[in-house]
Amino acid sequence: MKLFDLTGKVAIITGGNGGIGLGMAKGLAQAGASIAVVGRNETKNAKAVRNIKALGVDAIAVEADVCDSEAVDTMIATVVDQWGAINILVNNAGINIRKRPEDLSEDEWRSVLDTNLTSAFICSKACYPEMKKAGGGKILNNGSMLSLFGSPWGSAYGSSKGGIMQMTRSHATAWAEDNIQVNCYLPGWINTDLTVKAREDVPGLHEKVLARTPAGRWGEPDDLAGLAVYLSSPASDFLTGTAIPIDGGFSIAI
Image 1 (cartoon, rainbow, N blue to C red):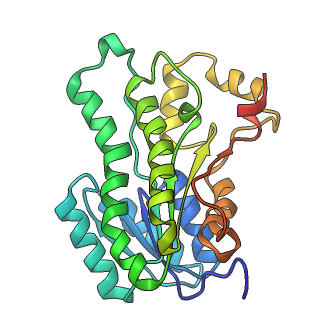
Image 2: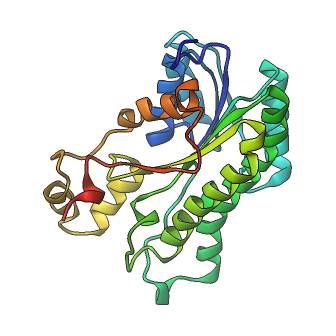
C-alpha cells in the first residue's frame, strides 16, 4: 500500500475553483485523484479544471448551490455518473460578512451559517451512502482560526466555524463504523480573495499577522495541499474527529 497514493480515487471539492479549495484540489490531483470542482462561477470553474487537468488527471466542473439539497443530490449523481464512486469530500465553500453583531441582519446571519455550515452538512449527508457503498471515505471540513478564537467582527462567521468543528466530531463518531474518517482543517491567515478584503477593511492587519505568526509570512493556498493529501489518503486511516491548524504557528503564539 502506498500511503499517500490517491490513484483511482474520486474527490469532490466545494468552493474548489479558487483560493484554498483550488490549492487543495491541485494537491489531491498531484496524488492521482480525479477531481470534481464545485462552484457557481462558470468562468472560474473552467479555469480551475484546466489547471487541474494540466497535472495529468481527469477533472470536471459542477455548478451547484451547495445550500440546496436537491442541487447537491444532482451534483452527487453527476459525479457518480462520471466516475462511478465518491471517495473524498472537501467541504470548502464559504463566505464572510464582516460586521459587529449589533449591525448584522438576520438574513446576513443565515446566509453565512447556511453557506459555511449547513452546506457541509447537506454535502456530507448526500455523500455518505456512496462512501459507505465504496467501503469507506474521507471528509475534510473547512474550519478557521475563528473555530478557536473570538472576534467582534465575526459573529456569524465564527459561529459557523465553531459549528463546523463540532459537526466534524459528531460525524466522525457516527460514521467511524463505516470506515469514513471526518476531520477539520483550520487555516490561518492565507492569501485569498477573502483575506485581501479583510486587509482592506482592517488597517494594520497585514503587519499584525506577520508579527504574531512564527513562520513570518502569510500562507498560500498551496500550503494546504499536503494536508489535504494526508487527510484523504490511507496514511490517515486511524485519524478522525480532529481539528488541525495550518497557520504557520499563529494559534500557538502570544
